[in-house]
Length: 253
Image (cartoon, rainbow, N blue to C red; front, top):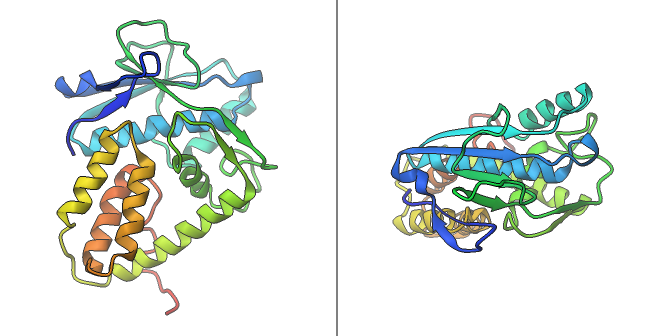
């Protein structure tokens, strides 16, 4: 995986992350928490930071990320910890405003002129409860992760029960297929698949493009099953959807 580029939310220019030239990515995720309550947009900001963290690590870059969050009531601190674990987010270090090269936020709240601001679009949600954030929710929390990653991170998104149901079905289908493909001899990932996936990631953390690559891999008949497995396992290092978790389990034929 080569150079990572992102659109700076203030200049709207696609720029190379300067941290890559030093071999260290210093990033800071800002949560707005309106009303001192963790909401869906805060989870989206955490996910954008997590994907960038994973992409950098996969590219061989040492990643460090901090979290800036208002002083929350104890129950919301617990909710934040619960959601971070349920959504598979690498936990950032809670800190004050830390020096960073990249800031991830749903508002232009960083005042440094010498950093990159990654804009996170607003989230409207028509859910009675958010998986991973509220207890007693039956949906797979990683379905929420997939739903939030399915659109460009700077665009508005509306979460609906139907969207979560579709994401949950997609995860179940992909995990079942990956478990089947794992039984086949390993094969190298086709170069074209790698190039398309890397290009998508390098272009403003283009996770929707990576998901498109996976859909192609899942349906392209000329790709051997062993190569399908390797592609899904490799790209899931960035996606964080636990696509290989059913490998070795019994599945109905």
